[in-house]
Length: 474
Image 1 (tube, rainbow, N blue to C red):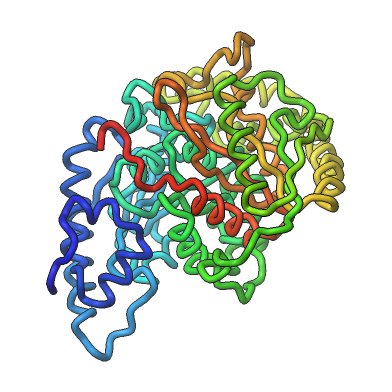
Image 2: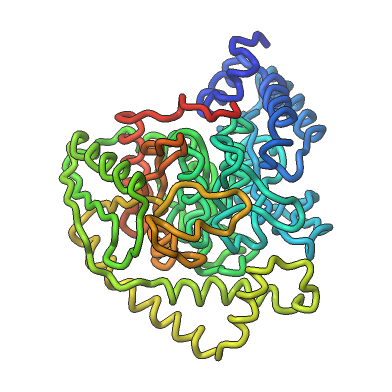
């Protein structure tokens, strides 16, 4: 095959373009994998994005993919020869999956999660596993097994979490596609922190197996540098799986083609408080408000609103922490292998009566009526993705925002509500702070309406392109 793209440029080429180049024999899968592995070898010691790199296996698969391209009878999948990474909360057959805890340091699953199986069946080449906090318990990325993952834009800052290894990898050109998970914002938070795109599909759109600690809140989905790459992953990965009884029926949607549709005339609401948010950083607020105005330029009818919703935080936190605490309860006698903050959550949660957990479910179901009524009027809701810029890499949270103290989850008030409802939501890069740190805008859609969310994100990307911006480490 005749290479037409320089090695370093291959690391920044979108997956949609890579797949087309490989199919036309303009680029070899071997060249692509070689380039990305070289970049991982160079940058990962500083970033700690990958906690396991399958270099030999990736090279072997790349050679097999190259041979397949030369065979006239070969059927090439939509991701043929394209590399991707997998978060260390997602199981991989024969490949260590620790869930970010020393308690599972030597765990090797015997099957692939549905999303991994589908990525591989589509021709994707898994490069390795990316870092995560234990069971995704916080929106930053550090653990007692692999340590701290760092933000490519500033190595002293967090890449967010819990899919922080994935976001750091994508932002630094260490693979164009990444599998992330999201139980309270864990795809959208790190996407905002690192200036990439992250989409939390509708609950059940991409099946989950095995069930996570926060099963009813957890989504799995794409993290990419472009909206089109995420749509490509959606085409490959969406659809039911019998192992997940809550997975949605298949829909006849080509998410890539759907991106071309117009957003003109959509009713769009922008809110930077939702009626219950206590504090938002001034730079974040200003950047997101400006980004919202871009939707008016795209032909949308944009209104600034304060819906005055009550906070769903207690319901979300009881269900989220209750699931993780239940998973971790058998290991309380191994305190040294559990992060202090997580250990505190486990103890607090187990001390509460079980009726509080049940009440949280009733409260959750009741809270749905607020966004349900809201989305009878509006097609989309825009908010800041998170309330602050990236904070110190080894911290669990920012501590304060705009001079006000916030608790452990007080800085993610815009993301977890839509895990409570299961609605589709994404984060798009929409600017940066004076210090050069990325800021994200969240786009939330009606139940099951992933198409409109992705279409709106693609329209915003065309108006305010971001994919050519590269972090300092790049």
